[in-house]
Length: 162
Length: 162
DNA sequence: TCCAATACGGATATCGTTTATCCTTATTGG
DNA sequence: CCAATAAGGATAAACGATATCCGTATTGGA
Ligand code: SF4
Ligand code: SF4
Image (cartoon, rainbow over all chains, first blue to last red; front, side, top):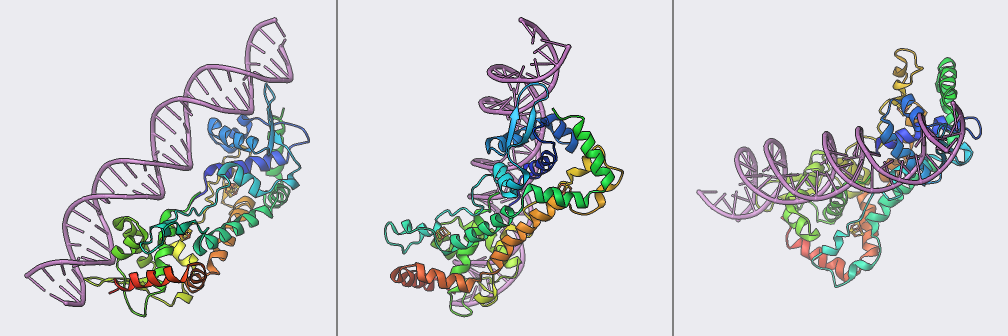
């Protein structure tokens, strides 16, 4: 049970987009180059963010992506679910329906204890991700990253914004 | 990011084993038949439980599996990790190492904020699973399952224990 | 007006994991 | 000694993740 690498890519891209000046766009090409990722495939992750309405996009030269809301209003869960899907990690295959002792039509009775417990854990995971916003991420990153690198990265990006 | 169906299988099997009289064994064949699962493949899941020391096994006719500890001392997390592995769901591919602005050797500086946040969520998931024991599962199931089916299933199993 | 750069989406190929089956070996109760 | 079992290796099918390619529509700038 491993998250796709697109999750990491999307989070990194959102961190960059969260640092952009208001209203500016950054292209897939710049994001791919900055992270050393295959442009065409990263594009799929960004399209997922776009379909989830987390980012706006424009076409044409100087086109690209920007966050559709303030970073404080986008959570990790929003991003993760955009690329990974909203399905729960535990899927119930209803194997109790194969119980040789069961009466006919018994298994219509809703999810059992096993499913409920697994889904509770899934919800705990989601709650944890829901509690962190992109604004908080940028704050943390700014503390981690050496000031010189932080500044140079910002300038690198600013040379390429639309 | 979907858990393997072996997780569900293993949990169901543990629920059965938790209801066995002290010291009795139940075979893969019986467990597979009860749940309508392919015997050979279910066997792999049970072997995982065995390697994780959650169950004991014996060979020969009337051989099979039993819990190696009281149900109150085996958690959902034990079972899930036995078949799914202990690796965290978010793997960091260190893409910040590709940052064109980074100084040489920068990325040795440990996990960044993104990884920490994702790993915190993973730990919240594990903590939730760690809080539920097989004893609690059996209690819940006994409430859910109609008494007649519960009794018949128990008798079905008892006809096959070693 | 035209061109180049871009987002978007469909088609396809590659790769690894999950799922599943088969077979051999060692062990053990009857 | 025999039959039933756990254990584990080898292998294949099915599926999803990864990755690339191309065609279309849109748009800013020359
Ligand atoms: S509902 Fe519960 S008992 Fe039924 S198949 Fe799903 S996990 Fe198993
Ligand atoms: S440590 Fe953080 S910044 Fe570096 S690659 Fe992993 S997730 Fe990305």
